[in-house]
Amino acid sequence: MSGSVPLAMDVAQINAFLEREFPQIGIGRDFIVEEVGPLSARLRLVYDVRHLRPGGTMSGPSMFALADVGIWVAILAQVGPLPLIVTTNLNINFLRLPEPTDLVAEMKVFKLGKRLAVGEALLYSAGGSREPVAHATGTYSIPPR
Image (cartoon, rainbow, N blue to C red; front, side, top):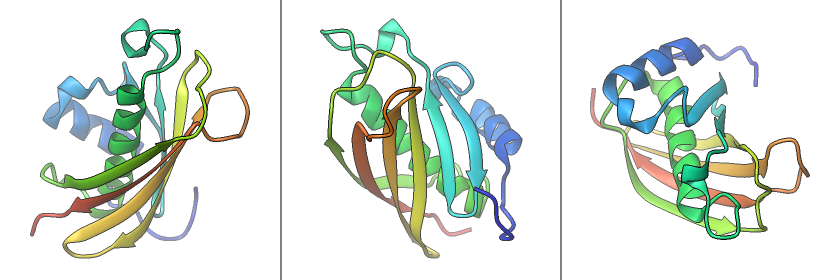
């Protein structure tokens, strides 16, 4: 996810920002920001019994949270530490049963305007098939600076 476009925040800056502004999300414990790049990011949701549904696989709400946090982080990396970027819409399609392991989400930001950003997340079982287990698209409101 490299490129020549300068980022407003790198992984370390995003982690520090999230720990300070949004500690309840569990950055570094539940969610791990693995990489940010121009209009992109990759996050991991760590496998834990708290994220399981009956049947022992990662739950839909946990997958939804990974997609939402992931797209939000991809936008933060581009625009900087604006805590009040908010989700205005998020749609998710669950494509197949995830394996009982960490989930990895790869995000792309397709539109980055002054007031709105639109992105997508593809979620995969870590170490498993490269077939996505879910696909999400989201729109986020960016507050005035």
